[in-house]
Amino acid sequence: MRVRPARLVEILPEAGVDLLLVTAPFNVRYLTGYTGSNGIVLLGERLRIFITDFRYVEQAAEEVDPSFERRRAPLELIESVADVLPGGALRLAFEDAHVSVRQHARLRELLPDDVELVGTEELVERLRMVKELAEVEAIRAASAVADAAFEQLLSEGLVGRTEREVALALEAGMRERGAQRASFETIVASGPRGALPHAQARDVTIERGELVVIDWGAELDGYCSDCTRTIATNGLGDQGREVYELVRTAQLAGLEAVAAGRSAREVDGVAREVIENGGYGERFGHGLGHGVGLEVHERPRLSQRSQDALEAGNVVTVEPGVYLPGELGVRIEDLVVVTEQGCEILTSSPKELRTVQ
Image (cartoon, rainbow, N blue to C red; front, top):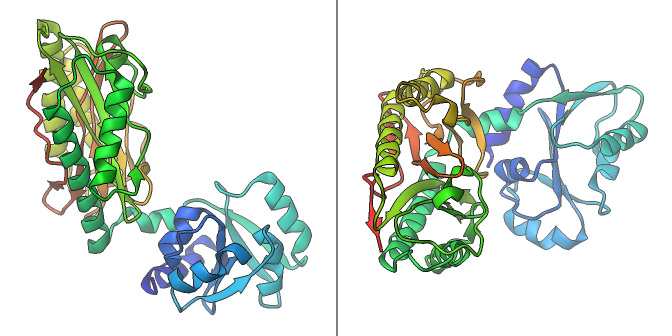
């Protein structure tokens, strides 16, 4: 927690600013250790201040790194920013993706005229892209919890249960193994509903002869996991098997392409080419993957529009899919750590097509 703020201060000159106001909760947690819902950070070369309101004073005393000066403020924390600034002209950066128009206007109203407000994009997020060893181990542990819960779920069967029942059972299994919560709303999509990439689990009964897309993750000690498997129920037809094997081939090719120094767009293209050559290019409409950490969707982003390059220490998903409206869907997703030579897979569930009752 002392190193991260120092690393951030080092890149402030590159952004052309003197101080940074951090308001995004996940970024505040990354820099300070604070897990509450109302806290902000003001950071500069000679300034390291954490601000919260009266509800979280004791929690902050326990969680926030001692290198931060802790301040108590009214509920609207930005009201206190002007009070803690050093005197004189300066450029104060704010996270433009996380400060509302109203908050910006109020800041401008409160700050002295010689303080210039400068919007910045993803300064903290850039640091979060490359995971420390402890972060990787936390994500690995979250993946293990999620995988164990999934194996228990499959052992109990799918046919005759509703999507919602399966999702609730999977989330309960993760909690029983120590997860604080699911890292996102669990997706269970059976039969034709599998063609909805972000389907919500509903009171739809899972039948024989279907593919069931299950996308789930656990949050453990603040860090997320993310995995997707597509499972067959007895009596699956030839088309489902054909599409499954195509997606599995694309996913394996994507995994093989992951390595430090590769562009995210290039890695996406390797998997995408397999699906295009199989005749389903128009049915793979999302990017190949995304970063995972304190949030389940972070940088880097693996897509045809991404400008990111992979670095050792990135934790990313590799998740190609094919979606046939009204018929079926297949997605296979692993969570991996990028290394200099390739990647290490954190998810352990088998990828060969599995059939359950």
